[in-house]
Length: 500
Ligand SMILES: [Zn+2]
Image: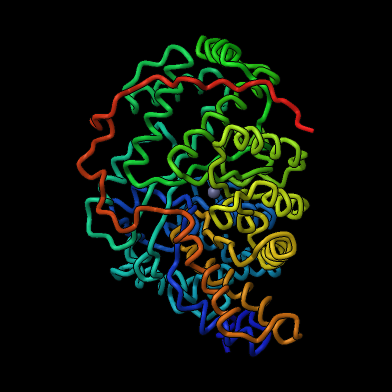
């Protein structure tokens, strides 16, 4: 009997029953991931397990480093087969790390491979997978169709070209692919040279000269409009914590001129400027009915030597411990009091914030959109069984699990789709176990309906992606959109009046 059985993670008959009947057959709505639009546009083919499985996967690199594998075999110049063998030699040492579950679930679901991966089984697995990768259903698009992914939202910098999204939308690909607006670089004012290179790129994408703050805001808004025309309905921000400081337009304009002129912003100035922009982004999202995602609390790039050598997102990040609550409350309140609080999904990197976030969302539900403010699925280091259960429990205890918009892959790899299956098994196990204990009613309609909604329907309804519309943007080039490039008026963050 293989390791990943039909009953994997399902520890009761009731859990198995609900999983099979209400969860396993659901399609996938993947509203946050880091798949490359280029790979999807070109329907990338993968030539071996390295390309589809290891390339770009910082979770695996971390495990390999921890296992004493030299950097050459992680991000360095070793050849793909050597890197795969180094990973295979590490896998037996990942017992109880989620990588062990993911690795075997992925090998089984993509290739039907049941062997445990180690250095002995690795050569045959490499060979077999390499042959299977030649099949049409193992191309970038083939995989998404095979896993019945109805929608994918990528993660896009506002300065990025939308050419790949246009290519995808013109094609007959059955999975709908939409961009998501992630303007993190607008807030990185500590490195003026990099900031200004990015502003120049933004200027070209938006076709707006950027000298002053108003130009900058107009260019960002232009790209927000452009992405909207391409079906984007989500923004996303990766922040240590929310920025919610008082900042007048004059202060923001002065800060922008300073950094545009090549001078780094200091701590307080940078925080004020970031606050000003975050309110601006909140307004943009609210006006268009988008959902804003906040990924809060990851401590990034701890290792300066490796950052210099390998760049960002190479596996040198961890769980941060900044206080989150006050700034998050102030940020949401600043938007709410102007009537411009968008729908939001808030993800915490630190498990200590589960209850804080699960209670915070309740302060800003508006009685119109069910589940308007969401606490996001267990993220990054929390994307594993224990933390998923903790997130589900906190949300259940403090909010409405039934309105939860569910799981995302949040992955750079096309091999990550079984994470939805993993989440669904954890969810059904939790629910099934409580039914067996008599803590939940054994009602198919009630409980089965909730499971089905969390697995798919809630996200599909909540996010309002233009699923059925024919690609509105196919005839629209990145710049030739015919929309007026207007300045942005009236953005002024007033002094916060403390309510009683
Ligand atoms: Zn992400």
